[in-house]
Amino acid sequence: MRRGDDYLKKLIVVVTFAVNQNQKNIAIVDGYCFYPDERHSNSIPWHCTRSKTCKARFTTSKDKTTVRKSNFTHTHPPPRFLINNGVYYRLS
Ligand SMILES: [Zn+2]
Image 1 (tube, rainbow, N blue to C red):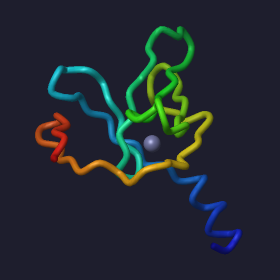
Image 2 (cartoon, rainbow, N blue to C red; image 1 turned 135 degrees about the horizontal axis):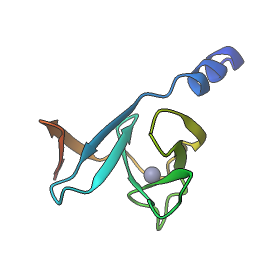
Image 3 (cartoon, helix red, strand yellow; image 1 turned 180 degrees about the horizontal axis):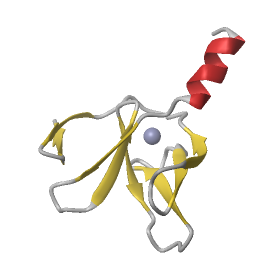
Image 4 (cartoon, protein in one colour; image 1 turned 90 degrees about the vertical axis):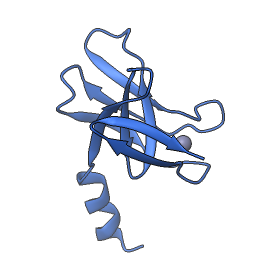
């Protein structure tokens, strides 16, 4: 990958916020699903749903408008899913 492409990729992060079937908040980036650690007061760390083996994560401001830190390097392929009316459904 050219250096310029890599730079642009870091500038543009498209995050889709949804809920799962248990009404828990989730976020989707590049086809990967993340769940929040909402105990923090000033920011929200989001961890990959496979965080036991995958270190991908990012941090947003509390109002979810700003992505602060990010690591979108996953150790696994993305899950198959669909979002219907803002609800995330995992496909097998
Ligand atoms: Zn991951």
